[in-house]
Image 1: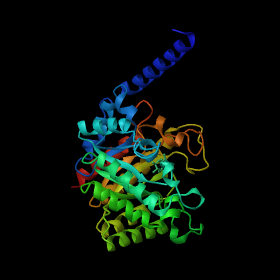
Image 2: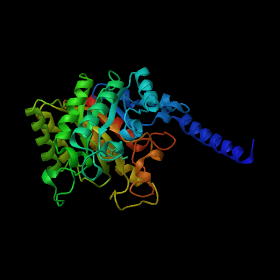
Image 3: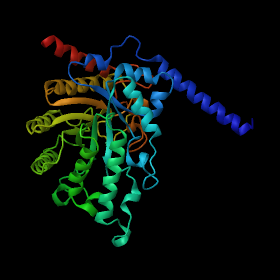
Image 4: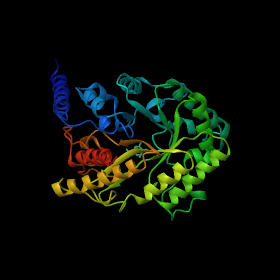
Length: 371
Ligand code: GLA
């Protein structure tokens, strides 16, 4: 072997050994989230195809979770980056097949979003090289029919549209709509079209609108009026996904989210918590803790407990809770919005349960005892 290749081989071996070691420590003796929450709702996390294939990561996932979502592998950029009809389903299939084999539900994420899109869809024979309305509608139809059709019967719930509204009250935008390429070319109708196409492709799948900041009164109003509008037009929508990227300080409590969840429930829809994490950086955009201290972990555990208690109170209209990432070491918050320390999830990098894990288990035990 050439020295360079030898080095590469050694690095790969090192990576595999580290990953194996990390997975091998597992949560020996810890209870299963999936089992503990079975009487209430499925609990899970965003995972990658690699995690189900490497070491005994798959065993850990199968033991702890009853629902999973692909962190990136089912976004248009992953499935259909290279142009019309050129799909790459292998990685996503590995994840979905794994889930099926273990009786784990799958959330499909996300058919329509302004980020990680299949950008070729937006170019065409319209003004300035944009796709025309007809071109983009046809591509949306084809993409959704092909992808939802491919996973038909294997995906429980789809995030059909992600983040269609802008978050900031001060941004003057027509009706709160985000001016994505979808909106620019198709207007707000792209949402109804996407839901219709998804329903045509898999009439059994639950169809969700997913967003962040859903605790804010403004997002709540926008979402409720979107639901009413779709319902009036007979467009199928079954639930709202609440991303719930929170911190130890923000929002101050989960009352705003609970109100949105109740209001959504009153319109006959279900709610799922789709991307929960509770950052140790109080201000997600600015802060950078230097160290994970026991005091921070305690605070985080209390926040997780409050959060799950709220979900348990609303269990009639909450049908899943998913964390955004398998463990602290792979959390997106380690690199976004900049590289820094964070530990926002229930398991550390060695998959050892943190105080937050035990707080979540305690919340379910208290619920069971109160019956
Ligand atoms: C949003 C998206 C997710 C993911 C996170 C950050 O919340 O919905 O798919 O990209 O951002 O990683």
